[in-house]
Image 1 (cartoon, rainbow, N blue to C red):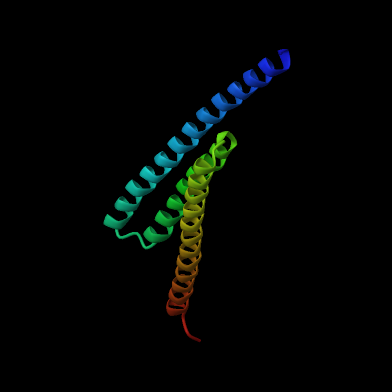
Image 2 (image 1 turned 180 degrees about the vertical axis):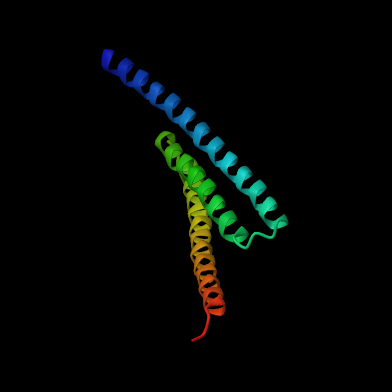
Length: 126
């Protein structure tokens, strides 16, 4: 009897902690996405050449927080249908994160090539 009550009590505490954690990470992800979007608009308007790279990095970070919240959410999932839904969301967010990291890598390489090209153009010839 005491064992069952303490198990239910601990499960209730764990569920509460997880729920607050999910809310925290979801909120952090949304804030990062909003700030990145606003900075992206500003950088676009000021014609910053690093706009795409910085926006992609911010979006990737925001998605990482949101992915973390979904992973944390799996702790309290008990039904198969909920588990499938969470797995689908995790797979979708992981795919988006992968694509954003690929975009970041491509943009960083392009940016580095552009900087190298500009240095060679401005070097005096002997």
